[in-house]
Length: 485
Image 1: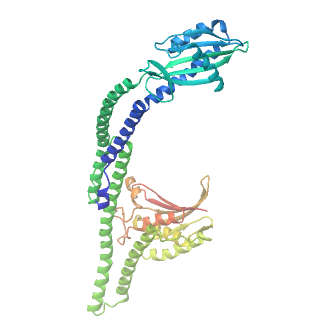
Image 2: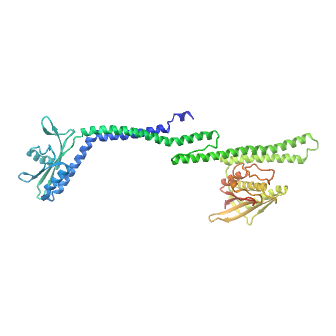
Image 3: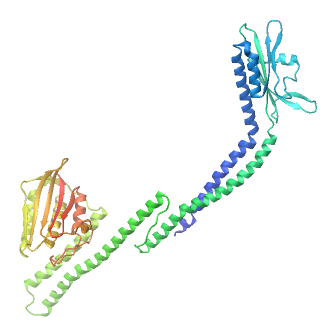
C-alpha cells in the first residue's frame, strides 16, 4: 500500500460522514421550521385563511337574503368574528355581527372606530390588514406593527352591492399563541434528534458493513493474486457491482493462470527448440574440427540448416512481439493474389519434395485484391507449414482457393487441408494462443516455435481479414484465412 493510499479515508468513515451530514441537515431544517419560523409560518397561514374568508363573503353578496346565515356558518367553521356595515349616502348601518371567539378585538371596539375603518380601507385601495396586541396594563387591544405572540388579525374590505352602496366587512382572526407549542416542539425535537442520530449511526454501521465486507474480501484475494496465487477465489457481495467485480477478477485470475502456464511452456519450448539446433551446430562443428575427412558439404549443410532453424524461431518471436505491441503496420496494394500464392507454393514444393511431402494448390480463377501482400502470404505459409507438421501418412497438403458471396460481401478464402489426426473439440479455442501445441505422435521432428498460428491470427486481424479452423479427431484439419474482395 502506497503512502498516498493510506492517507485516503475508508469507505466506512466516508459513509459515516455523509450520513452524519445528512442527519444534521434534516435536524437543522426541522428546528428552523418548527421552532424559529413557526410563528411566522403560522401567522402567514392565518392571514391567507382570513383573505380566503373575505373572498367567500364577497361572493355571498350576490344573494343578500342569505348573506347573514352564510356568514354565520363561515365564521363558526373558521373560528373568526365578522361585522358587516352598509354605507348609503346618509349613514352607516350595521347589517349583522358574528361574535364567535372570546376576547374578540372588533367586538371590543366602539361603533365609531369600526366605521372609521371604511375610510381607512378606501384610502388603502379597498382593503386593510391590521395587527392588534393585547395590553395587559391597560386591559385593551392596541394597534401594533411589531410581531408578537398571540396577536389578532383584523382585515377590512369593501364590496359594492347591487344598488352601488358600499358594504364593509371586518374580520377578526386570532393568531393562537405559539410559545407553549414551541416549548412542546422543543421537547419533541430533542427526542427526535437523539433518535435520528442513533438510527443514523446504526444504519451507517449496517450499510458500511454490507458495502465494505465484499470489497475487503476482494481486496485480500487480489493481494493473493498479486503474489502469484492464481487459484485464489473471489467472492462477491449482496449487490451487483461487487458481484461483477468479483466475476471480472475471477476471469482475470484464470487468464493470468493461463498466461503463466503459457509462459512456462514458452520457456520449456524455447529452451528445447534452441538447445536442439545449438547442440547440432556444436556437435557437427567439433566433429569437423577434430576428425579428418568430416569437413564435408553435408555436415556444413546440417550446421546451416540448424542455424536457419534458430533464426526462424527468433524471427517468429520478434514478429509476434511487433504485432502485439502495435508496431507492425499494414501496407495495402492491389495485385493478383492467385498468381502470387501460386508462385510461393511452387517455391515451397521444392523444399517439401526432399522430405517426401506433396503440396498441391487448387484455384479455378484468377483474383485481384487490395491487401498487404507480405502479411497475407506469411499467414498462408504459416498454415502450410503447420499442415506439413501434422499431416498424415500420405504426406499430402492441399491449398485451395475459393471465392463466394456470403450475402453481404464478396469473399476470398484460402483453405489449407491436411490428413492428420485432427484436433479435439476442446482444444480448438486454444490453438491460436502463443506457444500452444497439440500433442501428436505423428508429426515431424522439426517442429515450429508454437507461434505460427498466433501470428496468423494477428496478421489477419491487422489486415482486416479472418481465420478459423474446421477439425475433429481422426478427420484431419482445414485451416482457413479469408479477406473481403
